[in-house]
Length: 203
Ligand SMILES: [Zn+2]
Image (cartoon, rainbow, N blue to C red; front, side, top):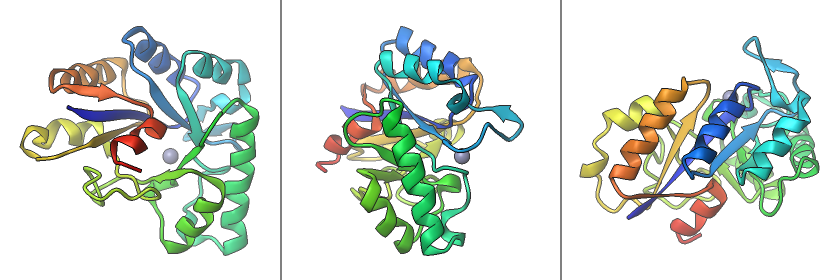
Protein backbone atom coordinates (compact mmCIF):
# COMPACT_ATOMS: atom_id res chain seq x y z
CA UNK A 1 0.00 0.00 0.00
CA UNK A 2 1.31 3.41 -0.93
CA UNK A 3 -0.19 6.89 -1.28
CA UNK A 4 -0.71 8.62 -4.60
CA UNK A 5 -1.40 12.33 -5.08
CA UNK A 6 -2.68 13.59 -8.42
CA UNK A 7 -1.71 17.22 -8.87
CA UNK A 8 -2.68 19.70 -11.57
CA UNK A 9 -0.55 22.72 -12.36
CA UNK A 10 -1.43 26.18 -13.69
CA UNK A 11 -5.20 26.15 -13.05
CA UNK A 12 -6.56 26.13 -16.60
CA UNK A 13 -10.30 26.59 -16.90
CA UNK A 14 -10.49 23.27 -18.75
CA UNK A 15 -9.09 21.47 -15.69
CA UNK A 16 -12.56 21.69 -14.17
CA UNK A 17 -13.31 18.68 -16.38
CA UNK A 18 -10.41 16.78 -14.80
CA UNK A 19 -11.70 17.79 -11.38
CA UNK A 20 -15.18 16.48 -12.17
CA UNK A 21 -13.77 13.20 -13.50
CA UNK A 22 -11.74 12.71 -10.31
CA UNK A 23 -14.80 13.45 -8.23
CA UNK A 24 -16.80 10.83 -10.13
CA UNK A 25 -14.01 8.31 -9.61
CA UNK A 26 -13.79 9.08 -5.89
CA UNK A 27 -10.28 10.52 -6.11
CA UNK A 28 -9.25 13.77 -4.42
CA UNK A 29 -6.92 16.00 -6.44
CA UNK A 30 -4.67 18.95 -5.73
CA UNK A 31 -4.87 21.99 -8.00
CA UNK A 32 -2.04 24.54 -7.99
CA UNK A 33 -3.34 27.85 -9.29
CA UNK A 34 -1.54 30.73 -10.94
CA UNK A 35 -3.21 33.57 -9.09
CA UNK A 36 -2.08 36.73 -10.89
CA UNK A 37 -2.61 36.04 -14.61
CA UNK A 38 -5.78 35.79 -16.68
CA UNK A 39 -4.26 33.27 -19.07
CA UNK A 40 -1.13 31.20 -19.48
CA UNK A 41 0.22 29.49 -22.61
CA UNK A 42 -2.73 30.98 -24.47
CA UNK A 43 -5.25 29.26 -22.23
CA UNK A 44 -7.68 30.86 -19.82
CA UNK A 45 -7.05 30.42 -16.12
CA UNK A 46 -9.58 29.58 -13.44
CA UNK A 47 -8.49 32.45 -11.24
CA UNK A 48 -10.73 34.71 -13.35
CA UNK A 49 -13.67 32.31 -12.80
CA UNK A 50 -14.00 32.03 -9.07
CA UNK A 51 -17.18 29.96 -9.27
CA UNK A 52 -15.08 27.15 -10.78
CA UNK A 53 -12.58 27.33 -7.95
CA UNK A 54 -15.41 27.16 -5.46
CA UNK A 55 -16.68 24.08 -7.27
CA UNK A 56 -13.20 22.50 -6.91
CA UNK A 57 -13.22 23.11 -3.19
CA UNK A 58 -16.80 21.88 -2.81
CA UNK A 59 -15.85 18.63 -4.54
CA UNK A 60 -13.23 18.04 -1.85
CA UNK A 61 -10.16 18.87 -3.90
CA UNK A 62 -7.26 20.77 -2.39
CA UNK A 63 -6.19 24.08 -3.88
CA UNK A 64 -2.69 25.48 -3.62
CA UNK A 65 -0.44 28.10 -5.14
CA UNK A 66 1.55 27.92 -8.36
CA UNK A 67 2.81 31.45 -7.60
CA UNK A 68 1.36 34.74 -8.77
CA UNK A 69 2.79 35.09 -12.28
CA UNK A 70 4.57 31.77 -12.96
CA UNK A 71 8.13 33.08 -13.07
CA UNK A 72 11.18 30.93 -12.43
CA UNK A 73 11.70 31.68 -8.73
CA UNK A 74 15.41 30.88 -8.87
CA UNK A 75 15.91 33.85 -11.20
CA UNK A 76 14.23 36.42 -8.97
CA UNK A 77 15.52 38.68 -6.23
CA UNK A 78 14.60 37.92 -2.63
CA UNK A 79 11.90 40.59 -2.62
CA UNK A 80 10.42 39.36 -5.91
CA UNK A 81 10.27 35.80 -4.57
CA UNK A 82 8.47 37.10 -1.49
CA UNK A 83 5.98 38.97 -3.64
CA UNK A 84 5.23 35.96 -5.86
CA UNK A 85 4.58 33.77 -2.83
CA UNK A 86 2.84 36.21 -0.55
CA UNK A 87 0.31 37.44 -3.11
CA UNK A 88 -0.60 33.97 -4.26
CA UNK A 89 -0.85 32.67 -0.72
CA UNK A 90 -3.43 35.31 0.18
CA UNK A 91 -5.37 34.73 -3.06
CA UNK A 92 -5.59 30.98 -2.42
CA UNK A 93 -6.59 31.61 1.16
CA UNK A 94 -9.34 34.00 0.08
CA UNK A 95 -10.64 31.42 -2.39
CA UNK A 96 -11.16 28.83 0.30
CA UNK A 97 -7.81 27.07 0.51
CA UNK A 98 -8.23 25.95 4.08
CA UNK A 99 -5.64 24.50 6.39
CA UNK A 100 -2.05 24.15 5.34
CA UNK A 101 -1.61 25.54 1.85
CA UNK A 102 1.11 24.24 -0.45
CA UNK A 103 3.01 25.66 -3.40
CA UNK A 104 4.17 24.05 -6.65
CA UNK A 105 7.27 25.78 -7.98
CA UNK A 106 6.94 26.93 -11.61
CA UNK A 107 9.09 24.67 -13.84
CA UNK A 108 9.83 22.69 -10.69
CA UNK A 109 12.60 25.19 -10.14
CA UNK A 110 13.88 25.89 -6.62
CA UNK A 111 16.98 26.52 -4.55
CA UNK A 112 17.73 27.23 -0.90
CA UNK A 113 16.46 30.84 -1.13
CA UNK A 114 13.19 29.68 -2.64
CA UNK A 115 12.76 27.09 0.10
CA UNK A 116 13.48 29.64 2.79
CA UNK A 117 10.80 32.00 1.44
CA UNK A 118 8.32 29.19 0.75
CA UNK A 119 8.58 27.96 4.31
CA UNK A 120 7.35 31.36 5.51
CA UNK A 121 4.10 31.20 3.56
CA UNK A 122 3.42 27.57 2.81
CA UNK A 123 3.14 24.21 4.50
CA UNK A 124 5.00 22.38 1.75
CA UNK A 125 6.56 22.81 -1.71
CA UNK A 126 6.36 20.51 -4.73
CA UNK A 127 8.95 20.24 -7.46
CA UNK A 128 9.06 17.90 -10.45
CA UNK A 129 11.54 15.99 -12.57
CA UNK A 130 14.27 13.54 -11.68
CA UNK A 131 15.06 15.04 -8.28
CA UNK A 132 13.43 13.11 -5.43
CA UNK A 133 11.19 11.49 -8.02
CA UNK A 134 9.69 8.81 -5.75
CA UNK A 135 9.85 10.96 -2.64
CA UNK A 136 12.69 8.72 -1.57
CA UNK A 137 13.62 11.62 0.72
CA UNK A 138 10.83 13.10 2.83
CA UNK A 139 11.56 16.71 1.89
CA UNK A 140 8.66 18.94 2.91
CA UNK A 141 9.76 21.77 0.61
CA UNK A 142 10.98 19.61 -2.26
CA UNK A 143 8.32 16.95 -2.65
CA UNK A 144 8.91 14.98 -5.82
CA UNK A 145 6.53 14.88 -8.76
CA UNK A 146 6.54 13.35 -12.22
CA UNK A 147 4.53 13.59 -15.40
CA UNK A 148 2.03 10.87 -16.33
CA UNK A 149 4.20 9.60 -19.18
CA UNK A 150 7.14 9.05 -16.86
CA UNK A 151 4.99 7.30 -14.34
CA UNK A 152 3.81 4.75 -16.89
CA UNK A 153 7.32 4.22 -18.25
CA UNK A 154 9.05 3.80 -14.91
CA UNK A 155 8.80 0.43 -13.18
CA UNK A 156 6.89 1.45 -10.07
CA UNK A 157 6.46 -2.19 -9.14
CA UNK A 158 10.22 -2.55 -8.97
CA UNK A 159 10.75 0.47 -6.73
CA UNK A 160 10.79 -0.80 -3.20
CA UNK A 161 9.31 1.07 -0.26
CA UNK A 162 7.61 3.89 -2.13
CA UNK A 163 5.38 5.79 0.29
CA UNK A 164 4.11 8.63 -1.88
CA UNK A 165 3.85 8.93 -5.64
CA UNK A 166 2.99 12.39 -6.93
CA UNK A 167 1.80 12.78 -10.49
CA UNK A 168 1.91 16.18 -12.19
CA UNK A 169 -0.70 16.94 -14.85
CA UNK A 170 -1.12 20.04 -16.98
CA UNK A 171 -3.66 19.74 -19.78
CA UNK A 172 -3.57 16.05 -20.62
CA UNK A 173 -6.74 14.58 -22.12
CA UNK A 174 -9.17 13.00 -19.68
CA UNK A 175 -8.43 9.45 -20.83
CA UNK A 176 -4.83 9.78 -19.67
CA UNK A 177 -5.96 10.88 -16.21
CA UNK A 178 -8.39 7.98 -16.11
CA UNK A 179 -5.65 5.54 -17.21
CA UNK A 180 -3.29 6.79 -14.50
CA UNK A 181 -5.98 6.35 -11.85
CA UNK A 182 -6.74 2.81 -13.05
CA UNK A 183 -3.03 1.97 -13.16
CA UNK A 184 -2.30 3.25 -9.66
CA UNK A 185 -5.46 1.71 -8.28
CA UNK A 186 -4.47 -1.68 -9.70
CA UNK A 187 -1.16 -1.37 -7.84
CA UNK A 188 -3.01 -0.72 -4.58
CA UNK A 189 -2.61 3.05 -4.26
CA UNK A 190 -4.54 5.05 -1.72
CA UNK A 191 -5.36 8.42 -3.25
CA UNK A 192 -4.68 11.52 -1.17
CA UNK A 193 -4.38 15.25 -1.62
CA UNK A 194 -0.79 16.40 -1.39
CA UNK A 195 -1.43 17.90 2.04
CA UNK A 196 -2.53 14.47 3.22
CA UNK A 197 0.46 13.00 1.39
CA UNK A 198 2.76 14.63 3.93
CA UNK A 199 1.46 12.16 6.49
CA UNK A 200 2.28 9.24 4.19
CA UNK A 201 5.89 10.46 4.39
CA UNK A 202 5.72 10.81 8.16
CA UNK A 203 5.89 14.62 7.96
ZN1 LIG B 1 3.27 25.65 -14.45
